[in-house]
Image: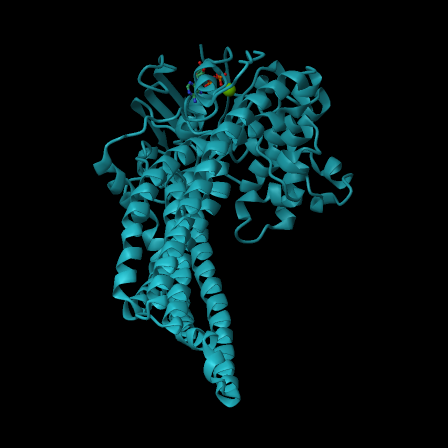
Length: 587
Ligand code: ADP
Ligand code: MG
């Protein structure tokens, strides 16, 4: 730090050089062809239930496509006749035919439009459901997934759920559009061509397998580049997600230049991957378009037959029109293939977030605790964060009586916060057990356990929203009780500064509570814990940012709470610690 800038940054080099790597490394591509299709099927299988649930708009869209293709197949022969009308001109016939063609064109226009809107509805609704499901699963993942080294960063997750999910919508639409509308139009036009001239149709059909092979090859290349492009932009997003919230630190260190350099490196990696992807994407439709040249060739061949008398002009025009209209659905299928190959990594990366096995498991017969007196026992607890990590806690015993206030002190990194995480079952201990009111916490429903343990943590989590919403966070889904919010704020000595805010309790505190000072944030967090009214309250270095006067007032508030709660105070300040009945040193 600052990073070494290579003259020609590439995705691979920054992956291995960058110590601040924020995303997963590029996984090795499996070259095996048999995996090629199974992977596509796996990706499609993941989204299948969501797309199937949208059967209604899909069916409507496909019905519209039948109308649209039917109109088209009626227009084509009429078009042939109209274009060769000059020899036996009949005004009334011409007017009637013109009218019919006009109606058919209008029908095709309306049906095509409706087809597209229904299919887009289906695609966007399925992606909405996928997003909701993925986010639900992400929230279910345990803390270790977010905290662990080499894990998926918040920025990466955000990118997958936002931008990559939008890519999935394009994929779903392209597939829905290809499956019925394109195939229908393709068959209808091919039938017309076959009826008019089987020989010419067969010649044009010869071109298609060659195209298909080339496209399949390019599609696989596209999937691989898309995957790299997704990873590189996810890295960029992770980087921004990390650096922007720390903007104060960056500016205070005059690190703009250094951050510019880091940004350039990530952005450049994305540039090269995206550029490869875009070029490939552009190539595929171009190849499909060369079928036009095939059409031109057939046209010349057909003209020869017309001039030799075996093929009339009317059939020729119908044939070529069909051929030209055949290009559109072929392009549709090609585009669907394109989108599928590009969307495959996005689908995989999205659903990867949902595939996990929890370490912290809620037993099926876990109980709800209605009320808790607040006795907490840690019995012979050992814990480490990972197999290769050192033991953080080893053979720890701690008995906190109901209604007792204890303080936990000790060197930084001693495992105080870890102990709290174990009590909340954010991790399970390696050995030993934790009891609340003599119930092993492994037998308590997680929601119930976490309702009875209130935490004011070291890292304060405030959200954009009003002060009242932040204090009444627990009741956001139902209704925040304003009376209790104010009492909680008064108890936490936050009422005074909240009332001084422009809109009092209705003031929006900005992202992560950015309009508040450190001490104000802490008092708000304490008010939130008081509002929650848990029997067991943990203050994990929660008063560290308070000035002596506020700290005194919060201490008085905690002393009031001590009458009815079990309180565990983790602190460094002597005054804070002294209000505890017993002080434990965790060394
Ligand atoms: P304290 O709160 O007493 O300062 P912590 O409980 O936060 O200490 O940390 C105890 C030890 O566990 C430290 O050595 C820290 O590096 C390690 N640790 C904390 N969180 C993690 C994590 N998510 N993954 C790996 N190690 C961790
Ligand atoms: Mg700590």
